[in-house]
Amino acid sequence: MNERVVIIPTYNEKENIEKIIRYVFGLRPRFDILIIEDSSPDGTGAIVRGLQQEFPALHMIERKGKLGLGTAYITGFKWALEHGYDYIFEMDADFSHNPDDLVRLYDACRNGEGDMAIGSRYVTGVNVVNWPMGRVLMSYFASKYVRLITGMRIHDATAGFVCYTRRVLEAINLDRIRFKGYAFQIEMKFTAWTLGFKLKEVPIIFTDRTLGTSKMSGGIFNEAFWGVITMKLRSLGKKKRKQP
Image 1 (tube, rainbow, N blue to C red):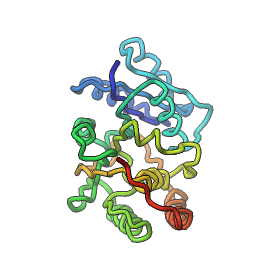
Image 2: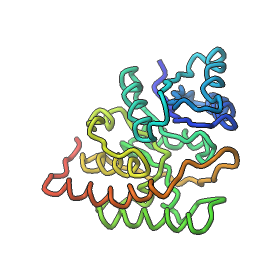
Image 3: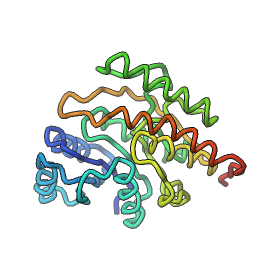
């Protein structure tokens, strides 16, 4: 059985979904794919179902409505653990994450550099293409804010391009992850860090989507701002664990 699976949440990604699936299946080593499809009205799910006839390693969970990024990934994590995968990836459907970098994230975990590898936009400066300056600054200083409040030495805490080793996801109580939007990415990293796992940042270049519509909103940033404070307060008094 393959040990690697890439989880891709989708909502209205008909312009991108076939291209990203074909690209990932063209990589070596081989990656399986799990699509978490939130009943896209544009027919994304139908495209994936059609491609499943061609690609046996393409899996899909269809959910009833747009239920949030965090719950999509939690659903995917549980499925991946149940099906025995050792390396579980998060990736966007819109090519803002370069699929070639999946191999680099995998190598970082496989070689023991980290228990969790993060595709980082900011570890070597600001590596973002096609974002308005206001959004770049908001994202960059959001990560600085997370470092200040939590104490994590991570440059890109909001990154959504990640490789988890199986033991990280097994150690996290996924049912207690609270956030659904932007703050979900921070909470997963913070939880892994407080459990004593090693987080490795791998530099990437993030390129904003050219097809489809962004799902970012002001409410997502508000959740992240207040969520970081809430997470830190909840963690006070808890001793940071050391992994063997």
